[in-house]
Length: 243
Image 1 (cartoon, rainbow, N blue to C red):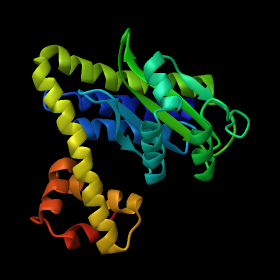
Image 2: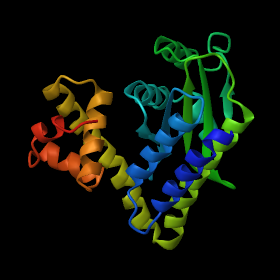
Image 3: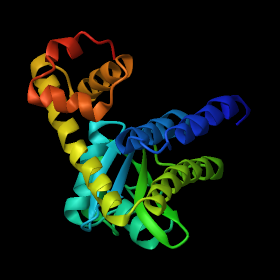
Image 4: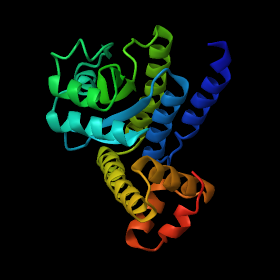
């Protein structure tokens, strides 16, 4: 733990720094999953967020595999992340080869993708739940108690930021913001697909180029993706950006 105190402190500070009045929800969520993958003993992470109209949608993921696996849970309406959201409690599956019975379809899909264990943490404050954080590992082992506490703390910071925004803003405005963030995710996926096709990249590489260009030019990820989809930004400019 000693050697990661510095990176962990920086992660919390950076996460809190995003919670300004005009924060980008997509960037907040992406930072959260990236921090989890970097600081915890996990191989991938993703977030499902409750949509204003009901149901869960994929908001962020560290890899394309994780995104598709989370999307599979939503479509099947079954999986550890959905249970964590509905129950408000952590769901730990140490070995999917043994514990297949609760979600056989999800377990098979996760195993096919090379994931042997999953930890789903609720994004909640007291009785209010807004989503869940999924942590995937390629080894059959439980996360340490320390990693679980850190993961939940990171999720809690993001949750507090979103709920704080709800508290200081009229409900209909917040709903539009949340729906806008989910719609923005669709634009980002379209932009990733365009980059992947035109640059001969996989989806993870395409996202790295997209995010790297946004950061180096100090523009919002969503805004950059939209200009790419609309044709006002050339894909060549992003394909020349180092990930």
